[in-house]
Length: 132
Image (cartoon, rainbow, N blue to C red):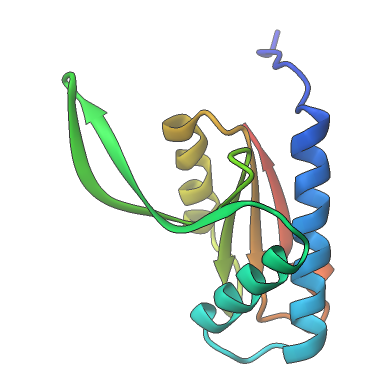
């Protein structure tokens, strides 16, 4: 029998919906074809307009052997301390992208993540919701 998890809190689901709406607004305005950092900064602007608290390019240390170590891991955007957002602008999402966002919940305790690839004709085809 598989492991069962508690449901994602309503607040995290609402925040994720707001992030998706903000990402759609960015994609409508810019379309595909730009570099990841452009989409990230525009998404942060949209999140600000919506009154959402977030931190971006957040260094994520790893605790190993009881010692906190700087690991070089960096979360693109952490929204309202409950949703991890990884932005991409790639031809195709690969398993390594999903593996990356699956690592962050283990290190942060945030169970909900959004992997958003802006380099697609329709943004809904570039959004992957990850629950850990």
